[in-house]
Length: 251
Length: 276
Image (tube, rainbow over all chains, first blue to last red):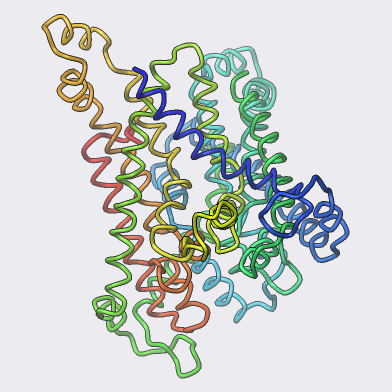
């Protein structure tokens, strides 16, 4: 089957070469896409740019906060759904997963604007975090549920028979078994939050510009090697997080 | 157990209701109202916004979005099936090969889209290389057209096609292939008369899983398509920002949402919930 192998090589090249080229050119001394010589100039500019630094910090804060909240809420939810099905809840969570991002974004925007009329608050970090928690919960439930499906309900029953109460059965028996799945879910939630542009840009306020928002603005403005440098860094960072997450899901 | 379970479900119920179901309800109600003079949402109630969906100006954008998504989906299936077949036949490196398909997918979507802008723009790598080699004098207009958007969509959602086809192929009964060969079928005959028909559920799932995000795409047409190749997602965004016509934007959103749900329901009715 030689032709099949060649075809597959082509597909793998299609998937990987654009990103590898982008990373390679982030080390190019020239501003233009002609290779000159190795340079770390764009990385130096990236790390000394105040606006980028602030945006990256915002992104990290938002991702950290929404990851913690979504992981706790999502894990509890998965456990509840594992004990007893709740069709409308799992259906809604699934629906939010397939809803186009632009629709989640504008409906959250409409909701926040509507809420502002009744309570005094404005778009900002808190609305971004709430939005991120909202879409991350489904991802967490998806991953933790996969883990729970392989769990053994008899273990909890044994604990209950031996005199544990329900809380102890959850905390001491089931939760420890779920730990790798929960870690994997948290890493996934973190990357999804850190990467989001569409929803974030709609519900962000003046004080909550995130890294993807700055990246988007720079990419639109035109060729800029600093964008390549940031991209390379995100590519490597995300790759590492996901590899860890994969490892955890397998153990 | 009842109390503990209720406590465990409470926060997710709260978030789902407040930040998903109520916002959607607001969109439904806006879609039936009128745009105010300064862009707000006012009474009276009307179905005017839904009638406007058939206005050729907007209808064109929707029809084009469907065709572009269909093209991207077809390409994903054409590329995804042989790739999945290749992975299934490589028993030894199966998980590595699958991870390599997924790796770019887990990279930032913005970064992946930017990678194509980097390749395709007038001063991008392809044009620079072709000019440097003396093949062309003026840069080719590679970026900001429908082809660029379709390439971006295929690049973005190809993993969604490979995975379901792969798991379908893996479940295939090898004995059937041997039987076909024993009965004198040539490899291509086995492929078309045995493997492909048995793979239909995987191909259907792959098609739906690629088509849905393509139809709702926003970032890809925005960055790779320029002003002339906008899709439904950009139209919605535009109504909520520059055009300030929230009622009409809401109506488009619900039409898109309805399309997505119909597709999913048809697939689940046909192949069961495990299909996805």
